[in-house]
Length: 306
Image (cartoon, rainbow, N blue to C red; front, side):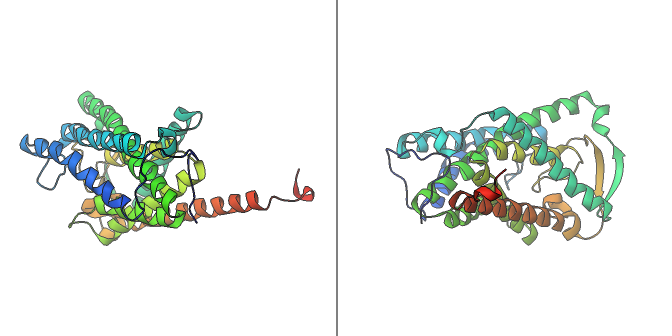
């Protein structure tokens, strides 16, 4: 059974078949991001694997993300011919939702790192070394803006456009699976561990469950931003296997012990604690959404109402 999320408006253009939508997403990524990536590689700001070199590389990589955001925006407006509200950019108190999500993302990343440290997976080497360098603090602030753009565009593309497009043509289960498969494919690296790939897929399920419950993408945009920014700047550990090259904002941590515990060179996202946290959070959101849907279909009788 097909379902609609965000907006029940009737599109005036062409909505692609569900099975084709992930391939269109991958194609749009390829044609929009490749020129910028090649330019940054020529300048020596990213390596041959596409990893940015230092904070400047991180910031300039935004050009590629802006390009994909514009490509998908153009697709939504001129091919599918539907509004931005229909891809999750809707609702009231948008800034409040974004900032609440930002705080949740920071808290979740902090909880993962704390669990790894308490379990002996990290050793504290220094406290807040970034505060000894005004330049480092400036770069960290710029990275917050940068991660806001990067994470928000990813949520717009995958949980806004792709998720809602697949759902319109098929059903919610297909939307969860296909959008998460595309997200994982586009984050794939031959160097990635199985835990990292599992985390990427489960994160996407979690983000889909979030937007399904909230009926907008503002909150999950903030959550993704807080998760990436705090993970990449607070502890001097990699985020998604990428190094910011900056001193730690909170504390410098050194991984010790097995990779399944601390993620090793991929950072805390590849830890078993991250997979566990995102799995539990996804189940909670999915169960709450199902409970709310059941109440909408069969509301409680007068004797159960206050």
